[in-house]
Amino acid sequence: MESIILTKTILFITLIILVVILSVAGIFLIKLLIDLSKLIVNIDEATTLVKHEIEPTLSELRQTLQKLNAIAGATNTQLENVKNAINKVVKIPLLFFDQFRSVSGGFLKGLSAGFKIFGKNK
Image (tube, rainbow, N blue to C red):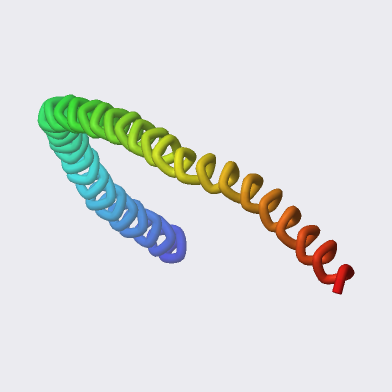
C-alpha cells in the first residue's frame, strides 16, 4: 500500500512540475509572439518611411541622369562638328600639297630629262 501511495505522490509531483514547466514555456512563448508582433509592426513602419523618402530621391536622380545624358549628347554633337571642321581644314592643304607634288613631280621629271639630253651632247 505504501508503494501505491508513494507512486501516486511521485506522479502528482511530476504532474505539478510538468504543469509549472509548461506554464513557464507558455508564458515565454506568448511574450515571444508579442515581441514578434511589435517587431513586424516596426519593420512595416520603417519600410513605409523608406519608401516615401526614397521616391523623391529616385525622381531627382532620374531627372539628373536625363540632364547629364542631354549634356553628353550635346557635347558629342559639338565634338563631331569640330572633328568635321578640322577634317575640312586639313583637307585643303593636303589637296594643295597633292597638286603641288604632281606639278613638281612632272617639273622634276622634265628637268632630269633635260639634263640627260644636254649631258649626252657633250
